Image (cartoon, rainbow, N blue to C red; front, side):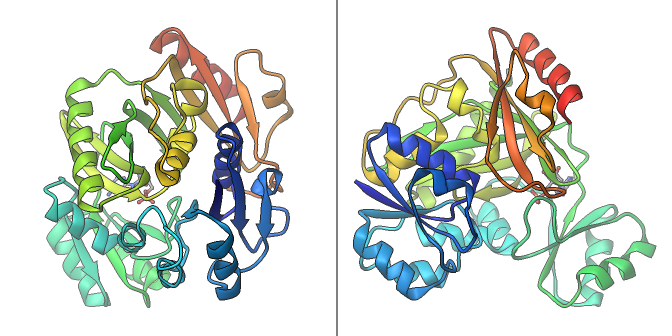
Length: 358
Ligand code: AMP
């Protein structure tokens, strides 16, 4: 089995490591020089929409998947008649546009914060009047890790927000004073079999994920999150891993966004679940039976952003994953996973190690 993976970053690298356990070969497409996944297989160093490179992958691989969300959907559509492409390009198309994504949540009855599309300065003022302040203005396309976002806290912020982001399609959302954030990660195969990982609690700072912990003892929330995940997977006739990020307010969940790929908030599954999200994604796209998604321990993850301090290499109770990337401010360079017998022990370890390495 040869699996083509578009994108060769850390997600590609972790997919590549999982592929070797399944005795599958990987071939990656990525324009960067020496990307993290180069450790795991051939990398075709061409742009993501390079027609020749995609044709070569389509001809030499049994299935194509992607680990990067900004792959042009048209590039995938050019090869779908030649080779199976999972997750379905339609899921990627919706995820690439925050307005389409929110309309899908609405259509599927998945609660979400009130929102307003913005194409002009007047729309931004209308949004502020309709949603109330604070509101967060986001680019509809190509935003990630909080990039392309502006929080409008008062009427005086409307002009700076428009100056910073205007000129592209935007969306405003009501600011949610959430209790905390969670993500649910599910996997579906082509026959419709679905498995869902235990709920993960996430902490973001400046729009970037910092820590994740799972399982969290929130059963009413878990049931709702699973229900929403099922609706998305089935509606999209989805194959592969899908992550849905949600805000928690009391007993309610509000959808923020979904990612049609393996997800940073699921890295803990490598050490913490019976089958990792990476292996299950490959199993789903390759037509192998899905593995169990149960937790086997209380797991937590700390992202290493901008630098990997020496202390991260000397931990007694933390496993370092170094993606081998050049340090750069704001860049995800690696992560540390901790495992423990109880949630309290895990949370204490996460607190202690976070203070040492971030
Ligand atoms: P996003 O890129 O949309 O996932 O946003 C990154 C992070 O910014 C989220 O995980 C939240 O921590 C925060 N955020 C985004 N949108 C909102 C919102 N409407 N209300 C409160 N916090 C938000």
